[in-house]
Image (tube, rainbow over all chains, first blue to last red; front, side, top):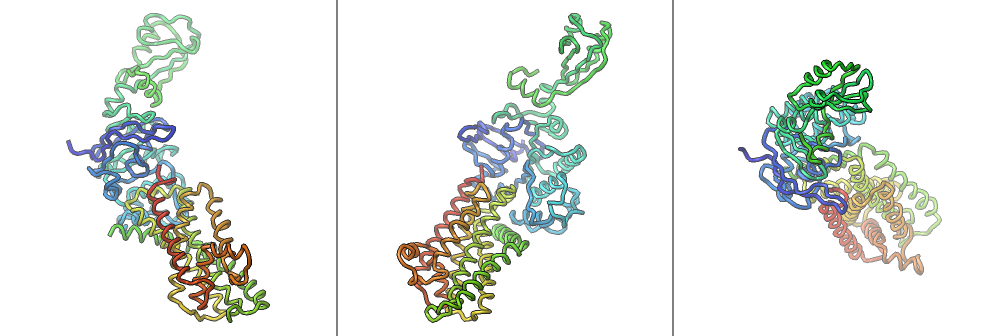
Length: 306
Length: 254
């Protein structure tokens, strides 16, 4: 297997009253999309910030393309792009100037061709001379991505790229992330949306309270943890659940007014619905939902993973 | 070459930033100081006799120019870095391959440019009234460059330390302006008495004003070499402090 693009070896970040990262070891492979999942405050941003040099690790080592991010920071930073979670912009400079300045920091003179390529890819060409103040939230987020790409990094970190953005932009950002990966850029994205990880990632890491709970292939992780749930609203209150339904995993809730059942990926709710009809129990509504990441966390934390 | 382009980018960006709002960054200090010159130097000064054979209106020019240079060099770096902290754009710089020394150079050079620009414009305005003769032009330039470098570096220290904009304004309002005004801008030290005179001899801004006055007018209260030594020490301390603060990551990096 090729050498990892990014390697964290027992990396910790400790603050006086908080351990943001606790002995995290992780390898990001070349050309993959790696999703780092976790609730707010889990340590995702801290991890990214340490790789990018924004935060200094208390312990452990981080390498990018085999070079230490502290000792060889010039090399590693030239190869890392970071799209921060918080939108930032300098109101003194327009879109084009913003990109040129960012490239300049990295020692890159942005050619007109490259500038246009970034602007077109991010649908910002018509706003080239516009002040970031006049851009919509989505455009500002795309400008952040443009800034992170000006020096053509080998690995791009996207910190919560779709937090608070509308569905259309979300999908266009996903498409662009795939394009970047297809061109050879390694992508690391943090998110607390499980569907985002499902949609994009090759591998997934789950972090909570600074600890890396699991790193796995996306499919393997979802098969193990991401069950679905069906909730059936009954036409009338049911006091006792027939044993045939209980055997299928159905359980009463809401004081007998509804039933719920959970199935693993690949399984369907067909057997439960058939049994419900066979038992002659009338129902008025059926609702299915995928488990949210928070639910997966609860299971992981309590060792109750399916 | 990466280093030089990075520093140049930061420097040019910082200069363009203050040139985008010339009314605020250049014109405003020039008008304020020109008013000082007109009121104190021209109106009041006409009733005061010459100092060391020089008309009073001309006597106060070096002090006012120094005040303009000091304030603007300080304000450029302090306001810019503080705004970058507040707006989050400091991240753009911190993830770049620029070294701390390069960041320091980019910010400080831009602060020096603004300080010198304001100082020169102020001097040109004053000189149209008092004459363009300068006793030691090279010395004036050296003094002002050293002064602006020192205060641009101090501005960076202040911006790193500050959590609120009020704190950024604290230093120019409560430290720089009083020390400059009490540093012999309007009065020769011989005219002062008692504690004020003692205070002035301990006031580092006095040596800066005095040094610039020597360069412009050819005379001074203190030995200009002592003045230059004071500025050199302050410059060295402020540059070293700014560098160490940047390197420490205090209030910048987590």
